[in-house]
Each structure stands twice: as structure tokens, then as C-alpha cells.
Image 1 (cartoon, rainbow, N blue to C red):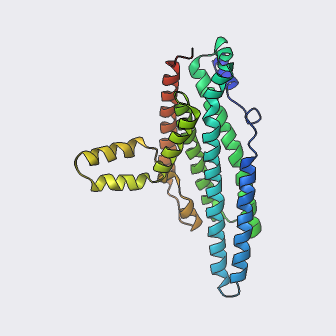
Image 2: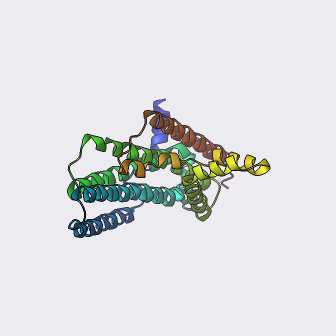
Image 3: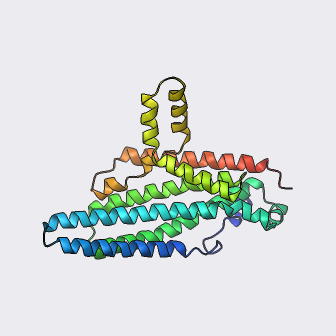
Length: 269
């Protein structure tokens, strides 16, 4: 069991081993700049509006902007790194060297998945520190009610588990360009999965069956997006936390298993 764990983790690209991506730091810097612009505009309106309304609007805007930045930049990193996890090893012929060792194909795939997830978690941790720092600096001291923000960030991390598995699935049989298109398309569609379910409930016949099947197969990213809810200090139920955790773990595990099965049967010659 020890050797098995070492082989899997040996194929997990650590954050330092992956390609440098300063773009996410630049992007978050742009987000901070936008936050400053929002603060300046709200300062101008303080003379006309009630101070409590200003503080509430300022906090809600910053929460929406900061959490959205963590989610969007993380998804972009997951897609554009994930599409090359397999293709890069094949193009550089390093995959054959890796598989020549006592490393099974499924260990290679799982190691790549864990490595990218670790990278995303590390990136999200730094962005979270920056987010809470901006919240503390530009709005008000943190309170116990801000714990709901951690729940929203936790859901974003669950989102990363799913999008990473999807990207790895597509990269196991498709080219990097098509893998990126497929993953991004599923992310966009999954963001509006509740609308798809509503469409299925209003449809009839084959359309109803097709829409219902699609709503079950497409990842439900809408359930993981509670940014607007926490920005307006609405409570997050414990049942939703349990459901989203189980859903994300099961969905990502199933998709990763699919990637393993496809890669196991892929002809690499």
C-alpha cells in the first residue's frame, strides 16, 4: 500500500512543478484595483446616502467581486492546465518513460488529478487571504456572520474538484483545444442547470426526457454558487452543505473513473 501511494503521489504535479501562471496573480490584482474603484465611487455617494446603506452595498459588491474572482480564475486555471496534463506528456514522449516504470495507467491519471487539485487549492488559499484582507481593509472588521463566506469558498473548492475531473476526462481522449471547449461549455451549461431542470419540468414527450437526462448528467454548478446569497448575509443550511459535499465527491470520482477507463484503453503508439 505504501508503494502504491508513492507511485500515485509521484505523478502528482506539485504547485512548484507545474508551469508558472502569473496570470492569476495579475488577474486578482486587477480585481483588487476594481475594488478600489468601487470604494472610491461609494465614497462619493456617502454624502447623499445613509452610511449604513453605503456599508451594506460596499460589502455586498466586494464579496460578489472577490468570490467571483476566486471561482472564475480557478476554473480558468483548471481548464488551461488540465488540458495539457496528458497531452503534454504524450507530445514530449515523457509518458512512455513514466509508464515504463512500475506505474499503472490509472495511477498516472489519479496522480495528475491530485496534483492539479493541490495546485488549485493552493491558489485559492492565497486568493482567499487577499479577499479577506481586502474585506477587512475596505469595509469593516470581520464578524462571526462572515463564516458563511468560508462556506461559499468551500463550495468553490468543490467546484474545482468537478471541473478538474471533467478537464482530465476530455484530455484523456481529445486534443487540448477540444478538451478546453468541452470543459468550458459544460461549466457554462452547468452554471444554468437549474434553468435546464425548469425547462424539463415544462416540456413534454421526448423533449422532457432529453432535458431531464441532460440535467442529471451535466454538473450542477448552480447549486455550488451561493455567492449572491452570502453577499446579502442569507444563511446557508447544513443540508445544502452535506448535499453539495456528497454530490461533488461522487461526481468527481465518477468522472475520474471514466478518465481512467478511457486512458487504460487508449492506444499510445
